[in-house]
Length: 121
Image (tube, rainbow, N blue to C red; front, side, top):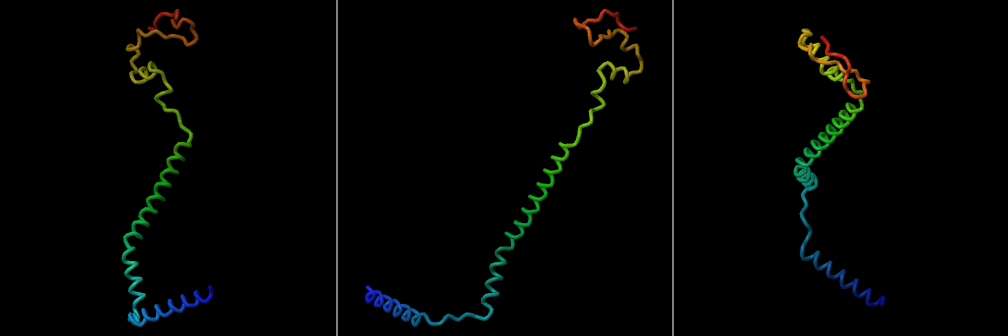
């Protein structure tokens, strides 16, 4: 087996030598690598800009999300409008008490929901 393997390696070496002789040495200029890197970097310019913009947008979205979460965590103050009943709001809006003269005042604790009192005058 080793004899056939040696023969295969020798044939392969002869094939590579023939190829090298047929093609010759390539002419590589001195500025080959710098030009190659310039071409690579010029092709990646727009992708770098896109990457920077996307990173900025992600950071802004994260900051906005954090801001809105913090707003949700703040204690909520009750609105002034909802602390008064409808009748009290009307009375405050119109200092004239005659507008509410025919309205009956119903105490909160009555069982039937109707007051035994007469309308306020």
